[in-house]
Length: 515
Image (cartoon, one colour):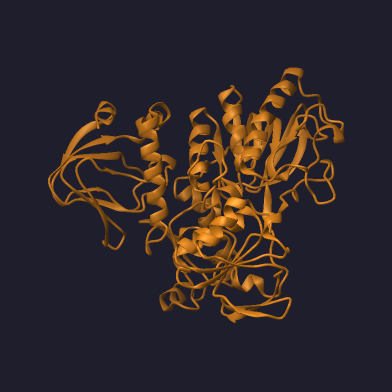
């Protein structure tokens, strides 16, 4: 409290005063000295109360998102208000206080994701591809949201009546306007979280991909004086950002969630001046004099002295008919708080034999779901860490070896059962798929050397000068997108950091003109 008092100012409020409301663009961190504050949703329902020595705030204090909630004094109030621009430097300088605030902000955001009626409202049918993409965007960016499907909601049906596909989904912002057929980028910037890039940006290092490898490179690149820009087409953190608990990451003996690790990495990168821009997708890589030119999906272009390809990989999908009808409704590729709440006390199948599948199965079982893990090998030990196999047993997860899904059964996107290739039919209400991934390299042309599976080749095999350099001088690759990489979070972070050293070496030698 004394530290915050030095940074902020003391204020008072009367009972009934509104300190901030849904839709506001900003608010300060509020540390309560005397009195009480109630936190309300948009409909006026009370969520929680904070009293003396409590503080009010969540992740939007750091990322600039539009306010999702309303804060009202319920008793005469005396408090310290710390403006956002003064709070951020504090998080870089005061370790114990930073840990307290960051952990609390992230836990509050997770809980908000399970409360109906908070955040953005997405109205559109599950048959609308733009609607499903908007839902994927909200989940990837851990936004509180509510989805109304006109097929099951009368009010939603009225909202979309007469609208064509181009006008879907209808997105209602907290306390703000109603958007028809917006792109994820438009919604992101309307919420105040999207960095709006200039028509042309020039940087020392462009990192394409915001997973562990990209964020590792951003931290080391920016901290060593490189003007660094990270572009990411979905949500910062990549697949690691959706992991329920990473228990083998050095320095976190009790484990750490992917969301927390990602949030800390983003905060650290921004501390050193790296910029992160989402959601922007790279469309092409070309050359312009002594720079590489990356064109983006919204028309911007980035001219970079060096480029790091850290695009990771896309989730593999089950090769079964009708899968798209269930995706986002009862078939998911990550197990977050909304999904865990949705499938509590239901029969759930987690498909996959890797650590991500094991972590998801344990998380869902702890939340009350009846979980069965399906994998295609004869022995789970071939692909999963021993500690996770023990956790599966501890939390009552059933494991079926040599099991592959051949058919899905259900109506209106709601799964009822699956049939395995051996003919067994099993009742499941939800399916979580962790089947590995394919490299996100479709946007690269043939000038970038890749292996037979599409992963980017680096190092001696391409006659490159540096270990993580591609066949194009000044273009590097790190993390899951790189051929031969170890598909582990810690390895990706290490490769991202290592790539920056090669970037410095390349810049010192002056990048030759691309051919």
